[in-house]
Image 1 (cartoon, rainbow, N blue to C red):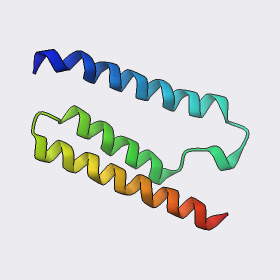
Image 2 (image 1 turned 135 degrees about the vertical axis):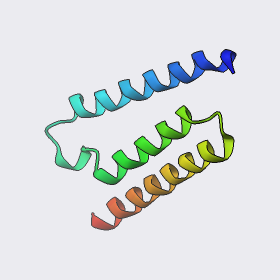
Image 3 (image 1 turned 45 degrees about the horizontal axis):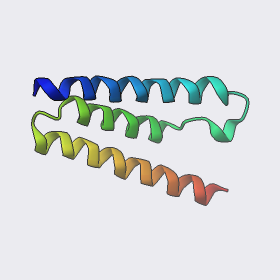
Length: 80
C-alpha cells in the first residue's frame, strides 16, 4: 500500500492541474466550460482513487464517474 501512495498523489495532482487549466484557459467560450455532470463525474473518479483500498467500493465509485462522464458526453452531443 505504501508503494502505491506516490502514484495516487501524482494522479491527483495531475487531475487538479488539468481541471485548473480547463477553467483558466477556456473561460470565454461557454461551450467549453465544464458542466455539473462532468464535475460530478470527476469527483466520483477522484473519490474512487482515494478510496481505492477497498477495491469494490473504489471501483464502484470510478464506475459511477465513468457512467456520468459518458452521459455528459451524450448530452452535449445531442444538444449541438
